[in-house]
Amino acid sequence: MTNDIDKILFTEEQILKRVKELAQEINEYFGKEPIVAVFVLKGSAFFASDLIRYLDMNVTMEFMTVSSYGAQTISSGKLTIKKDIDTDIAGKNVLIIEDIIDTGITLSTLAKLFRERGAKNLKVVTMLSKPSRREVEFEADFTGFEIPDVFVVGYGLDYADNYRNLPYIASLKEHVYKDKID
Ligand code: IMP
Ligand code: MG
Image 1: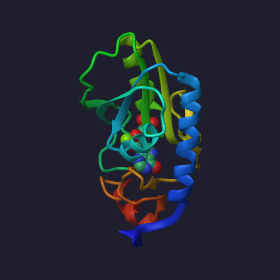
Image 2 (image 1 turned 135 degrees about the vertical axis):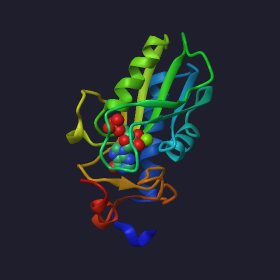
Image 3 (image 1 turned 45 degrees about the horizontal axis):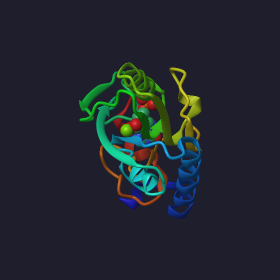
């Protein structure tokens, strides 16, 4: 598996340091207000679990699975909800926790959905963002790191469902996916 890794962009230590800083920003923003933390699975599983452990307010956990990707590195532009949260978020503070914003389609669609459902205050935190890849305008309220247009894996991020368990965030060697997309 590690033979497929090109370059480590963020080490475990760098990630944890940034996660704590983000938690601090979120603590300052929400204060003592309780929040519903929505984990956008599977990608944000590690990031969200790490992040919420440094939040000071009452936090409930909800899980959602959406997909805009097959086993490709190019977004299909369509979003399917495969598993929805199981609570009513009307009137609540909601923090959507995502792994990465690429085209912006996933989060702009999700943000619209949660607003329609009546969230009192909706905020979005993402570990990574690729601003140069946006197809729809969308920025998170809290962003871990901005990265250039490279495909990354690890710390929850996958390629064809693999590499999620790497403790760092890294780019993949081109040969891993080059022959599989047009
Ligand atoms: P968007 O809808 O194009 O913003 O895509 C967001 C989703 O695409 C993320 O939740 C990831 O699942 C996936 N994604 C985008 N870029 C990468 C990447 O570099 N590595 C792994 N997954 C990615
Ligand atoms: Mg994802």
